[in-house]
Image 1: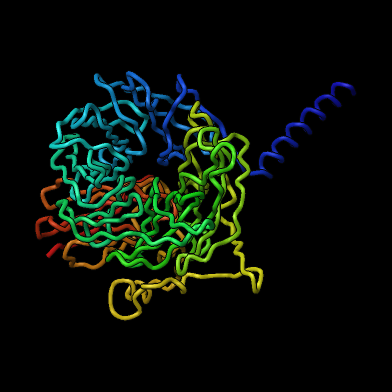
Image 2: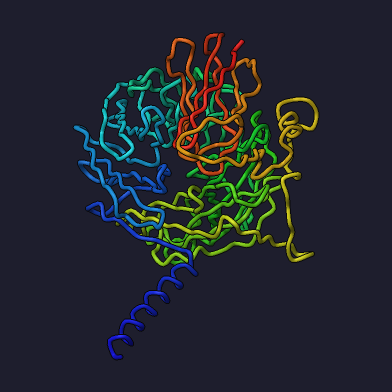
Length: 517
C-alpha cells in the first residue's frame, strides 16, 4: 500500500509538473559559450522543429571565433554545438548570417582587419563546408545578410565613413562587388524586395538597390516626438519584415531621444512611401542602470492583418524582461503590451515564428550566455486597446495598398478569396499519402512571366522549391516554412526560355513548367 501511495504521489507530481509547464507555455534556457561578452541575437529555424543561433565574443582581444548552437522547440540547448575559428582577428559579429538553400545550411560573414571579410558556409548541422577571406575595395562592418536573387548572398553594413554599404558574394563566398551609398547609418538588415533587388534598413534610413547594386531610392523614417519633447534622432537594430504582394514591409528598431528609449514600428511601401510609424514602448534612460527598450523585430501573427513586435526592456548590460505587442498592418494601431514572462534577463533578442511557436534567441543579461526562449501561445494573441470601446477587432480587408483593380493580387483574390496573414490561403484537398505523391494544386503565376514568379498552392513544410533551367542547372532554391502558402522567385536577369520548378518533400514530389519571356 505504501509503495503504491509513493508511486501514485510520484505520478501525481509528474502530472502536476507537466500540467504546469503546459499551462505556462513558456520555455527558456541558456548556453555557455566560454568567456563573457557574447554577441548573439539572430536565430534561424531548422526544418525539424529546431533553431540555430550564431554569435561570437565581442570587443575582446583575439576575437577570431564564431559559435553555433542548435536548440529545440522547447528552447533546450540539447543538440549540437560548433566552433569555427579564423586565422585573423574578427570584428563584432552581429546578426550577419542566414539560411542557405543550396546546399542546405547557413552562410555567415564578418569583417576582419579593415577591408577584408571572412565568409563561411556550414551544412544544416553546423559543420563547416568551406570558409574564405576576400579583400574588399574598402572596409565594411556587417550587420545583415540574405540570399541573393541571382544566386549567392548579399550582406549589408557600414563603411568607415559611416555610410550604408553592401557586398555581393557568389555561392562560394567570393566577394563579387562592394558598393557604398551616400546615406548615413549602419545597415542592420537586407531583404529581397518585391519586384527585384533589395531593401536595406539602418539608423532611420531605408534604401532600395537593384540586383546589380545600383541605387534606386532612399527614405528617412519619420518618428513621433518623445515624451521629453525631443526627436528620436538616433535608431539602431533595424529589422525588415516583408509583407505579401504590394503591401510593402514593416521596419522595426530601437529609438533614442535626449532622455528616452523606445521601440518603433513603421510600414513602408516598395516604392519608399511611409504609410505610418509608431512608438511601441518608452522608458526614461536617466533612471538607474540606463534602462532601454532594445533589439526588437516583428513576425506575422496568426490573426489576420496583424504583426507581433517583440523587444526586451531593462538596463543596458544587465538586461531585462521580454515584451510583445500586436500591431495592425493597416494603420499601426497598437495592442496591449504583454510581458512574455521570461525568468532569465535578456540583453539581446531576436524573434522568429516557426513550428507553431514564437521563438526568441539572443544573449542573456551581462552578455554571459546564449539565450533561447519559446512561447506556444502568443501567436494567437488578439487583444487591442481602444479608449472608446476597450478593444477593436481588425481584419485583412483593412490593409492599405492592396490593389482592387487589375493585377496580380486581384487575380489571386478571385481564384482564392480566403486570406490569412496577408497571404491567400490555398485549400488542401483530402488526400491519402502512401509515400511521396504527386498532386495538382501547385500554381505558377503569371505564366508566361517577365521575371517575377509566384508559386502558390499546397505547401509542404520543410520541402524545397527548386527552379531549374532547360539544361538542368539549378537557378534558385527556397525552403518552405510553416505558414507559407505563396512564395515568390525574382528571376529578372535570367535568360528567356522554359524553366521548371520542383517541390521535393516527404509527401509531395511535384514538377511544373513555366516560361520567362
